[in-house]
Length: 422
Image (cartoon, rainbow, N blue to C red; front, side):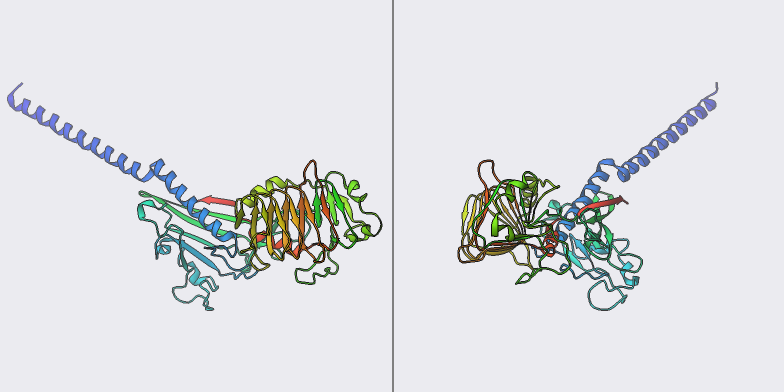
């Protein structure tokens, strides 16, 4: 083989080697780019960050009156309402649908004008907006708005027919707005956008003005237990043509309770059916689970036994609270509150004390007058003890109110009913 031929062979080999090297480099480069874009770990983290944004907004939409609540007042629902929760001012502009409100025919920013130039949902800061960037979960923006029907009416979720035996559903009559929440989560070069629908489930129906799993006794004939539906404003008159519940219901032995209501006392327990209005409850409430669920989101928690505690902020009809007493509670003064009162031990309710809403007592309850008129408007739920009994005495009032019980739904949290990963 000549030297010239040998040089040509060497040149060909070098060219082939160079082309092979370039090919390997190209494959490695494209594979690296693909891993950067589609890195599963990064995508998972972005999705988890979006979920964290959803969780913040659902919590901040759940309880009116709470610090950092971002929703509208109960009963005041504007179809165009919406909010962005952002980690930095201006990041709502990253939403691909940011400019949609400018053409939706609704007032989205609360200024009374419709579809003006640049209209969009207002921003409010995330709970972590004050944190250093490295300490934040990376959800740049989260958007919340009401679900609307084709006529731009706010869709509610609740007991539309006011019949506890039928399941709640979407309607325009009764309930709490169904909301749509969209959150963006980022991690590295990955971004995930997640949209969910969320609802507030109605509370389990209360069986009676007084629900008692244990035994009960009565003293005097001047008390009032009434399962007829009452209004929420004093003097708490019965609501005409409204459905009634039993005055007292028990899942165990209602006959033992009825046996204590003889003579004039029988007339003091009214409601559905004949007097005394005492019935068997087809619902066996899990009061322990209800107590545990409510206590996790309590506004006020008092450790140990309490006697005439300072009321502080125990709520009002317009500003409901969850008060959790982790022992016995004895009240003999003019304490007043509204919402859900949880008593892990025994309850002694007297003086001029008044509670509007629901009381859950895991021990025995004594409701007594003695010159004053302690009042419970809503429902009293008693688990009772194995060795004790609950007692109602002269001068007390326990009145069922469906309107008051329905208001307690405002204290429950929004839960995801459906979602889509975009």
